[in-house]
Amino acid sequence: MKFGIYSSIANPPRGEDLTRCVDEVIEEARLAEQAGFDSCFFGEHHQDKDGFLPSPLIVCTAVAASTTKLRVGTSVILLPLHHPVKVAEDVVTLDIISKGRVTLGVGLGYQEADFRAFGVDMADRVELFEEKVEILKKCWSGQEFSFDGKHHQIENLTVRPDTVQQPHPPIWIGASARVSARRAANIGDAIVTTPSTTLENTSRLINEYSQAAEAAGKKPTAIIMRDAWVANSRKEAEEVYGPEVLEAYKYYWKNGLREFQSVKNESELTLDRIAKDRLIMGDPEECLNEFQRWSEGTGAESCLLRLRHAHSGGPSHAQIMKTIDLIGDRIIPYMG
Image (cartoon, rainbow, N blue to C red; front, side, top):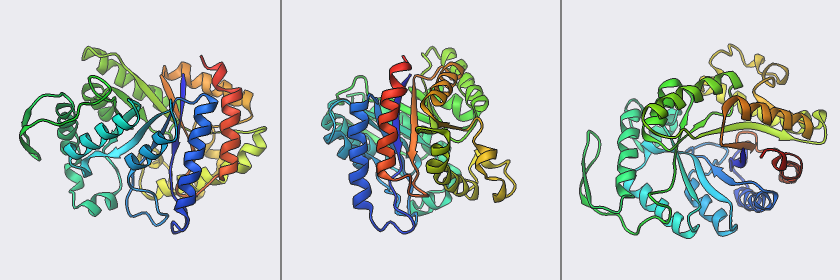
């Protein structure tokens, strides 16, 4: 199983020092490349008070320019908010700059504020999403095409230049429900699962995806995201990472994320209650056993680790650099 980093760039409470955060994330990406990580991914949200950077492809370009082997990508772009031709052209540009190292992860989105910012009806997001994925593929075909859909009409368009990766950069589709897993199988190149759920739920989702992919004559490719922290001891991991992940989970609970709908009160969000089977956290030996368990239980090709949390702002850059080193030294060499 390969490893990547998922980085949220924000600076609570009001985004006061984002230039420093960007510099730190680029330095973390450089170290991750040296430590044997495969990739670095970024997400998208809009109008967050903490200054969450809203343009992940631009951040990907900065990271690609500062590395040589590390793949860069989005996990995920909120595709219903964007014109697919513009996304296709931006990805082509990044594919050329990175010399074929970009992956486009796309998702539906779940926060009403994101849709309001773009004047998009959230009720249309599935129809918009499916049309846009189809148009992306046509844009990258190298052929002239037209498209007459419910939401998009395009006549006699040829997108130039061609992508470096052929037939096109991979399209990963974020999924947290059975219907979205089947959608990923039918129109995507891979599934990306949510980091905040259990192994049982993740395995069930990937099984649903794999069956649908095989039925469609495609090879299943699964990517898991995990909230994880490797430290010298379990106690250190809980002290450094615990408060950050709890702050993030409170944000997701307040915003109605599916994985936290069973939580009735914020007081239920304690480390003791949520750590088991949601977080991979502890000393290297403990974490290696957990990563192996998740690899065997999901068959995932890659695991994206969410080390930096936007809605808490931490852990610190120095602490992230330390855990990247530990993962590179004590985890990656033993994961095949």
